[in-house]
Image 1 (cartoon, rainbow, N blue to C red):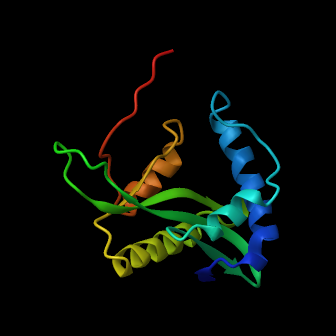
Image 2 (image 1 turned 135 degrees about the vertical axis):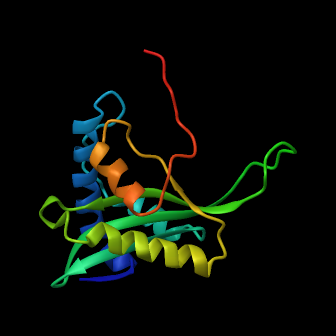
Length: 152
């Protein structure tokens, strides 16, 4: 299994993975997420953004997972410590390839990308009712920094 940066030629395969990703999220959190077919516009938009990148995981020339990253700066407020960090916007691995080190390899690529861009840390939001993902991220060294609470 290899990881590499996504290119424009990967948009069709990446769109298919995003379609699976949307379906997965809609099953976990139907109040917030909708299972839609990705047209290719979103991956194309990401690849056109200078502060965004996508790494792909490939096995036997098949794209089996991806991680979407963005360079972000904390708000410029006197009360906030200034940081430039990497936002993990999306991470997805096809179901048949989970628990085989694919996610770990994508997180490793993200950490290397963060170091090469002199970022202070990586950060992500994860669905609160996805304990498998939370456990995975914690094993990868990401810990709770904030909690988002919502009224019903």
